[in-house]
Length: 104
Image (cartoon, rainbow, N blue to C red; front, side, top):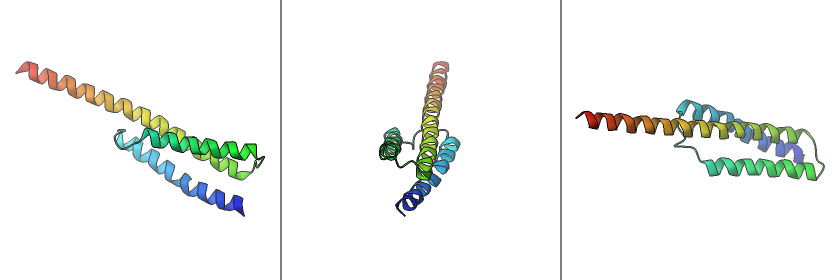
């Protein structure tokens, strides 16, 4: 029963991550994303996986941990992509503003 409840918890968390990734991809900005939060979640999933392996409880719950971890790692990649897009946007804005001021 404990494994079933743990899996339900992981599935509930797991459904939120793909939605978060889709939202972040569409936003094309890291402004509303938190790197420390993403890293904390990754650390938690790694701790859960490690606990399962150390206690020799290798079962279907472990698959849910790995799936969630994979999706959060995708989220981490999207964060860095969006951070780069933010930087490019700021640089192009600075160049545009500098050019406009120089022309006056």
